[in-house]
Image (cartoon, rainbow, N blue to C red; front, side, top):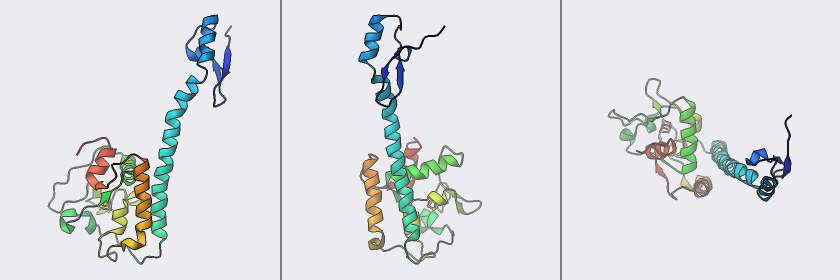
Length: 198
Ligand code: SF4
């Protein structure tokens, strides 16, 4: 017969069995240890979950910023010509805050890829550009710069004053995620979130 020796409840309301704590349920000494440590399994189990939840909230904030940007009454029309994705052609590279990089890295992983290809052509294609189709592989999750910067076909760069509040929110997300306090070049930023050094 199996006995369940409940020695208390954790802060999250879960019943704690002596066995959960790895102590001998027949032993008075074990019970004493279990009682002394009754909050232990809960605090250990809950800490990473809380951190993950907060991180998820910050990721959601990045998506909310992207949605808000899309709803701003600023006349723009991205034709997906991807000229802005060819960095040697434009002479400019998007810079990403940590939250943007995490969103981009997640989207990249969701395509089934783990590594960023190294650009080898003369145009300096973004590693996330599908050269075959001419499409961004993470278009729905593309960084803020890709939505606002220098593409003349889409209407030129946004005025900073029109989006400065959103930039400040991205910087706040960066701060709360423990970012470095400055945006990083696209490839470096996304590689960092993928666990690769570039
Ligand atoms: S992330 Fe997408 S939109 Fe941005 S530069 Fe790369 S391919 Fe272009």
